[in-house]
Length: 336
Image 1 (cartoon, rainbow, N blue to C red):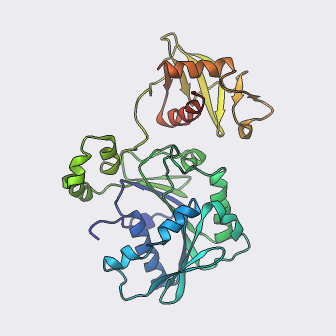
Image 2: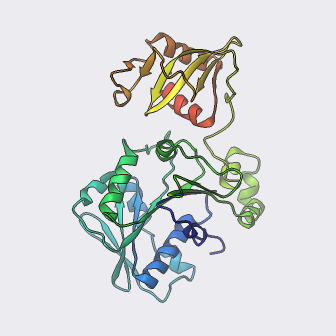
Image 3: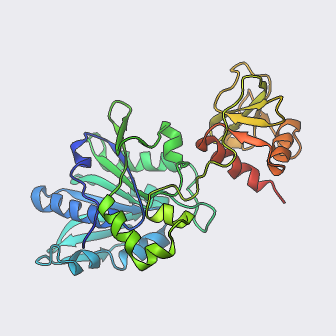
C-alpha cells in the first residue's frame, strides 16, 4: 500500500484522547491496524475497535484484515475474527489480539474485564448527520463510560479517526477543541488531548493527478477528498459582530450558550459572547432546560422566531463556524 497514516509521531504525545482528521483515503484505518498488530506482537497489548452502530461495524468486519495481508503486511501471521454473543474477537495466530463492539451497545460490557487492552480505536467518528446515521444521544458520556469500563484505574488511550467533514461534533464541543490550522498537531487539557489535522503532500499530488482527481478538481468534494478541507463547512454567513449590537437574549443548544444580538445594519448575530445576567434565557430541548430558562418552541417565541425569519431572508450572521453549524442544525429543523 503506497500511502497510509503512520502513528509513530502521534504516539510520541502522552495523550489520553487523540483526534486524527485527514483527507479521505489516507489510510487511517489501515495504519491503525498495522500499529495495533505491532503493539500486540511486541508487548501483548490488545485493542478495541469501535464504530458507532452495529450495521457500520458489521460492514467493517466483513473485510477487516484483508487489506493488511493483501498489501504484504503480516502475511506470515494467521489473522482471524471470532464473533461472540456480546462482542467480536480479533485473533493473531489463534491468540486474541483485540475486540470489536459498537458504541451504541457498549454499555453491555460493564461487567467485562479487559486487562490487556491499552488502546481504543474509534473509526469514522465524524459523520454527515444529514444522512442515515446520527450522533448518539449523550455520545460523549457513552464513550467516557466505555473508557472507564475498559481501563478502570489504568492509563489507556483512545484514538478517534475521521475524515474532514465538519468541526462541529459532540467531542469538540464537549472539550472546546479546535483544529490546528497553523500546524499538524495541537494539544489541549495539559496534553491529555491532542488533535492532529494531518496532511500528506505526496498523497495529495498523486491523487490530484489521477483521473478521479481531475474529475473532482475545483469542486467542494475535491477540496474535501484531496485538500482536507471540511466538506460541510464554509464561510457563508460568518461575520464578526459589530460593536453597535444590542443584546437580545441567550439561547442554549446542547449545553452551549449562544448570544443573540441585534445590529443597526439590519442583521442579527449569533455569538459565543453573551451577557451573563441575561433576563431572557431560552431552551428548545428538555436537556437544556433548567430553573433559569424558558422552555420554548422556536416558532412561537418572539426572539427565536425572529432568528428564524432573518435566517430565511439571509440576514442572520454567525461569529464562527462552530456557532453557525450548531444554530443551522436547529433552524433547518424548523423550516417547513
